[in-house]
Amino acid sequence: MTATESIELDSRGIRFAPSSEDKTDEQARLQDDLTLRRLGKRPLLTRSFGFMSILGLSCSALSSWEGTLGTTPPTLLIAGPAGVLWAFVVSWIGTMSVTATMAELASAAPTAGGQYQPELTSKSDYWVAMIAPESCAAFLTYLTAWLTTLAWQAAALTSNYTTATILQGIIVLTNPSYVARQWHTILIIYAVTFFTVAINFTTSRTLAKIEGLILILHLAGFFGILVPLVYFAPHNTASFVFETIRNDHGWPSQGVAFLVGLPTVASALIGADCAVHMSEEIQSASTVVPKALIYTLLLNGTLAFALLIGFLFSISDLEAATKASATMFYPFLHVFKTAVKSTAGAAAMASIIFVLAVASTIGSYAAASRMLWSFARDRGVPLSQHLLNKNALPTNAIIATTGTTVILSLIVLASSVALGALLSLVIAALFSSYLLSCSLLLWRRCTNTRGRGISRDEVRMQWGPWRIPEPFGTINNIIACMYAALLLFWSFWPQSPNPSPEGFNWSILVFGTTLLFSVAWYWVRAHRHFRGPVKEV
Image 1 (cartoon, one colour):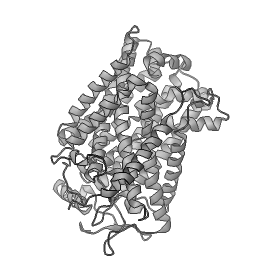
Image 2: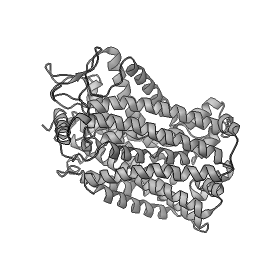
Image 3: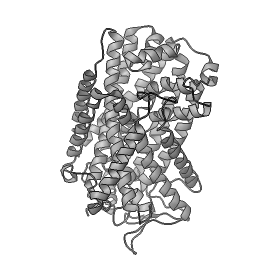
Image 4: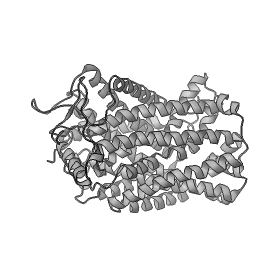
């Protein structure tokens, strides 16, 4: 199969491109550059990431087993231990389905744009643009790109805020007289931000090596937490972990309580698409990116599920742990202390989480800046021309992402509730973009059409070398759409009925405002110059 041949989307099957193992590094680089040029883009970024390094970036950006420590205690009060376990299983299956669908699209179009990135044609076309009806393709493309860009900008801020508050929690753990101030949080956010930016300003090759090291720390840290936790802590009974269902927040039924807690549990598995946004810096991207997406969910999901079971067996006093979070920020710090019966030991375990949280911000910033750079390249954001640069790193986009974090983190001084609402934008925005991409692909599959073309003579819709065979691809696509819609709907619900202003889920207001702004900007200005991806070659 030559470099100019394609793999068409139809019901007759698929021909696979040769695997990366059969190519030399130089051949792989040339093939990657040729693929990008067929997408209409000039290869500007250095391809230094291999499978292991991008797997490290994806796993650390997700931080699934680390995130489970933070999401489990509040969800226990909503649904109980058994409810949390089943919620995790549902979330894992649903997220895997969404990720597999995204992997199919990523294999077809491995560029930094992700959910809105181009199809393999003689002119670049976004995921949504290539599968949406022609009458609304440009608008849906723009909307998807805005949602994805904003979601990753919010994710970068989330990583920084989480890292800062973990450090403050460790200080409270070791020095109970310390009073955590909001301006302390901001200063720590700034320190973590500038450290993360410094790492991202290194060469692509150096960043790839760092991410390979982070993968090792991610795996070693898991055992550094799980082993002392399950060895030293007094254990709950199996019936408590696997059979106990609670509804402490007063929802009318256990089913509603389960669904309300589902997005919180699922948040530990969100973000695997960060590998997609690094596509233009990955060798053999059309095969490596889909593998990285799937392996990230398999590895992180397995580690998170194992830690979740160990954590549930080790919680001796949930109410005390929840109360301790008022000063320590996170209940797991209290659980560590009661488990090992040593402040120093608990602080050492928490320090592992802190180091890995810092590592997570590195991956989040890398993905957020590449997504912003890709959208600016196609003139989709205000001041797009100022976000582009001609060197091998998207430095201007990294600086812009840093500025976004610095400015938005000031919301902490005004209200932690407002910041929480902003951070909740991650789930809603990401799953909105997932839902758009997956549902439009399902429509194309069911109608057996080949996509929108630029001219009568061009090849229209194509698959990449990674694809789920039919009919399983369509079945998986349906599951992905159902799960994305389910999680999006319940992500707007408060944790308890009749909430106070502090307990209200303001994410629907933030998401709605963001959506209205993007729509208004499109019709006022962007529609004049945004026609989808800019063809550079």
